[in-house]
Length: 121
Image (cartoon, rainbow, N blue to C red):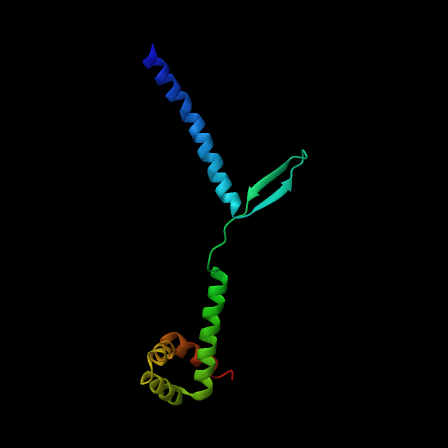
């Protein structure tokens, strides 16, 4: 009989533990911020705020596009030979300058865009 009450007690504890786990999870999410909204029935409902990405995709896309735009603009204004001379000058500098030279080297994308825009400017 004692064994039966222990088994019954452990079975009834399962759903309670699941509810406690759900409440703790909800509390953790709400600790990061929440929104309160009033429903049609007048009940105030609290929902956790959605987490945003640490790096917004749109901002990253705009930054990359602006970088290529700058690179193409400098390439158009200096010309291929003068641009490559400046990149070569950077390549013999410090580690940061070498990294800049690697990033600023003429790549196929920048060259193609510059060739397309050259007649317009």
